[in-house]
Length: 456
Image 1 (cartoon, rainbow, N blue to C red):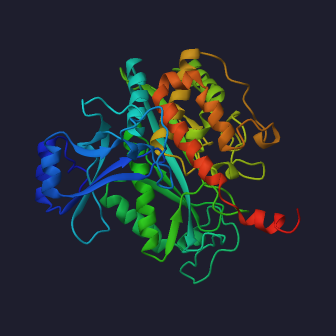
Image 2: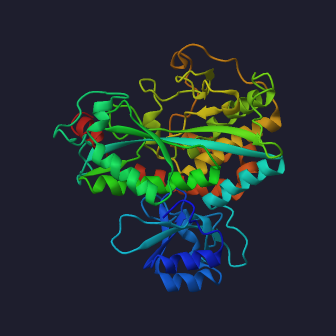
Image 3: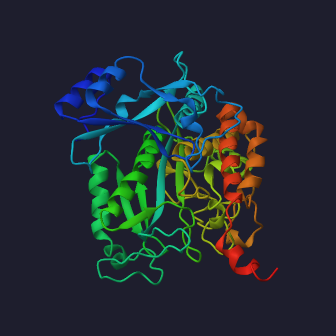
């Protein structure tokens, strides 16, 4: 579909579906983990629902764990598991390029039956943060960078993952950061990703081979935070589909291999005035503005308490470690990739801050909402950041939560984040993640069997 052929209202959407002879429409709702929930409906059934009040879904669809289990006792969702409405966002409708029959996908917002938004739905949370910026005459701009691994297909969950063979028939055995020939090994997969992405309006900029074996990074063009979160959300599925068509998996686990680098989702962010489009992070003489310093301070003060939104899984914290390229604190530096917060070398109009704490496994809506919320709180608090760091920040003390359980306790008690993100959302997200923690703690690992079976 040409990028200009994007419906902007229900009538255009209906005409678009019929003109392209769309057979089915996937109505997608992102849950707390950024997983796709929803319904697949025939075109005409979708049009009938679309022309009324949306599709019905049970409220608990939003508070399912990554295992598919639902939270049993919840402060937020109705105990009767009432219906909510999945209301299609017209501008998000896209072709699904890997099906034989013409199929579309559309991302839906969630509303209660009285029409009010479901306040703890991930898109609602991000929209509330963007509205808070809008009320101040500001608009954030973001650009995500997402790392992921290609791995050999595996059905035995007890076995470590392995690098897949490339075009040469061999698996990578070393680290080839930015290696052109190493990237060429996976050209068929990358070409499929680009082809699928172009067909579904996912605007990828550059691709690079990262440090790990068969680890790639895709950079997105900068733009509107909701649109970029939508694209990152859809991209994960796109990459997985492309990889499976070439006999391998694409994984966005934060730490899929024991002794290799983890995968991040770095979020570049700047803020412009809606009045004139000027970047608030720079002064007329191109020097850093007070707003940039206040924004950095907000990230430094509040990213540690927002960690469950940046590192949402047990596996996420295996990436945040001393022997990794990932940051271990929230020091800031100018073009210093060892810092959790980096101000890249860029022209004044592109002055921005990169949050390097976020894992590739994060829900892109919630990670974006959280980093923008931390920055907004910083603009409100108007405090100076800690001194800029010009050395390896890994030589400085560890200053991030080490485990999901600790991170959730900090997050639950973080009043500034509750105010900006919404207390009901904080409660709902914490309940989901504590539930997953309980399920994880029931699992006996291979490490325990190996070292405890006959030694204790």
